[in-house]
Structures are given as C-alpha cells and as structure tokens.
Image: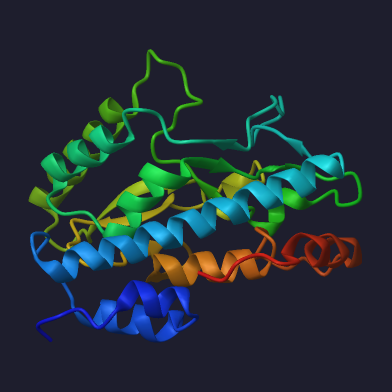
Length: 250
C-alpha cells in the first residue's frame, strides 16, 4: 500500500470498522509518510468524537445528581473531565523521548480529549464504581503539583527496567492510565489499566483485564454508557439506557 485510500473521508462516511482494520494492518508506521499524516487525521477525528461522548455522559450524569468522587473512603469530589492542558503536545513529545514511538490514538487522546474520571455514586445505583466506570488519566492534571506525572512515569519506567534486567520475561511496559475495576471500587485489585509501550502503530494496545486495541476498548465502553461491567442491577440498566442515547461510535 503506497497511498492512503481516503481513510478520513471513509471514516467520516461511516466505514469506521474497515478503516481501523486497514490502519491496524499497517503495523509500525513511518511517522514522516503521507500515510501517517492521514492516519493521524483519523485518530484526531476519533478523539473529537470520543470527547463529545465524554461531555454528553458527564452532562447527563450530572443532571441526574451523580457525584464524581475519589475511589477511597473520603469520596472527595473529583472533576469528571479536565480538557487537555497547553502542555499536552509537550507531554506527548516527552513520552516519545522516553519510550520511543507512542500510538497515534494515544497521542490524539492526550491532545484532544484530556483526563476522564467517571468514578462516583448514582442516587439510583449504589454500586456504580463496581461497574468499572471509564477512567483515562494521562496528563493527571487533578493531582498535586508537587507530584508531577512525569516523575511518576519515569520512576515506573526505571522500576520496570530494573526488573527486566533480572527477569527478561517480565513482560512489556504498560503506561498506567487508570486503576483497575477493583481499585475503582475501593477494594484491592490488580495492575493498572494502560497502554503497552513503545508502540509505533496507529491504534495502540490497551491492557485492562485483557489486552485489545484502544479504539475497540472505547467503543465497548461507550456502548455501555461509560460503565461496561454489568452488575445485574435493574436500575443500572435504566441509567445506562439513558446514557448511551445518541453516543457516537468511534
């Protein structure tokens, strides 16, 4: 494949599954190529649609009296969505300096969507956190300035490299983006959700209970209104039905 077959136009026309299939087939892509330019346009369009979904979900939950709060006993109020900071592009560049190429979908999320935290409590739904609410925090702008995210990521990277020296089969490095579904519910859990790095592909691999393309994960989560883990609570299904109305597929 030497020229991009109108990916952005086809994506906007509704051929999303086919476009993502073709983009994933490219593997690691030369970021200076014409293909990479249009692939990034598709990822940016995906991120704009994702941001609209996030804003709609947050607005609907807020109107229903949902309380967004920390995943601990204090339940401190937390902003559900913080748009990208002016340094978002700089943060992407820093990640690339540390790890090599990062997925285009990850870059687009950081630059266009921002940080999302849907953990909280619904008045009709006492176990909202156990439904694994969407959390993607990459710039981590709500955390204290004295604990900058870059220092934390660097420490995680250094620790991984030390373990890798002793255990070459330690696995791939995962850039943390969210607590797992148990930690979201203020109980002991497993490893953080996040992105496998380095990765020069268009759509990155997102590791949660399993590992799958990031856009596939997002489509699944948005299809459930931002709360993908079923609990069997009838009120939960009622809430989800209201949340998913008119959300955009990615």
